[in-house]
Image (cartoon, rainbow, N blue to C red; front, top):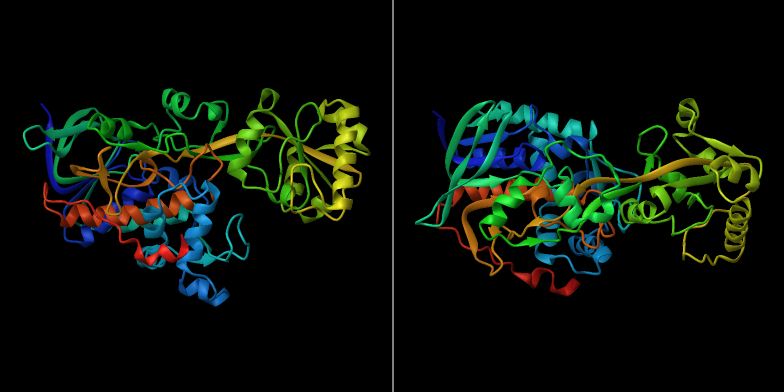
Length: 466
């Protein structure tokens, strides 16, 4: 025996994308069943910093009025050498003000950060009160208060139901707790997250990230991507992910990148620098993981210590190594003293000339003893590859045709990154999940099954920027 349920829209996955999809579908008058395989909603969004880039909001206009949609699109595309899809990027940026206002209507509270984030040319990073948890708490409360949405926690879907004659997705099957269940729906939205918690998929698509510390959602196991692939979905950017180069080995916490930005350097176990430390935290992660044992040491001076917000906490945790000179710090980290002394000397010369061999553009005023160090390694936060979709959230086959009845949003879809962790920028994953969750939910609620058409993108609005 199995339970059979029916709704206008089935949403599988209860992270940021799924919560937005369910709310958006309900706002269009649809009945919704929202399934989450774990015991709580939130997913990767709960683990996030709750930051998104957005243009033209009331909050941004209080700080800056010179930003534009085109400038933000270019900033997001630049790290990938303009190889990511401009239609997806433009859609997200154009809808960014709306998603801030819409989530505010569901209880979120946004402020604009005072910091100019790496890769951004304007003050546009918005943060929710309570970070990712604050955002999901607000969305969950709104979902729970919406009569048209039925929620099923610990409900693990195991596959899609296909009408073979019509070649249309008509729902999904799985287990609600221990009981078999089938949910039939006019349209289905996959918001099943990425695959950072699936060792086999990670080995296949992102092998350099396998040794990384996993700071990932438990439910990010990639099954939604595999279901869609079985139906012929095109998978794109599968080697892309968000990494983080600053995971403290000795305190098992993400470290403060500002110490590096303000002039700290990172060396390997031999005492050698190996990259430009003034870069994106994600693009630096593979470089750290490629070092012996995947280990680096964040080395800094009193100049960076005095600017740090976390040094006192690090001292309490006992993770700070010290040296009155370069040879003493080399001994503390177990590096070759001669190599580390040469590393420090070369960096000091670079500060004097302004010419660093790793092309670091932001150099400190000095780098003098005493020296400090903290041991670090790389993280993976979430993957950035998945199903190709159009700008309405329809899942696409390789030939560009639609898989009828199937929509997708969030970490299970093609993201804005490529080349491993190199092209990821702060907030990109979350803004894409929220915007396309809302878009996919509305489309799934308003398009009759089997009647959807691919959403063609009119490029005229952005041609001037490309």
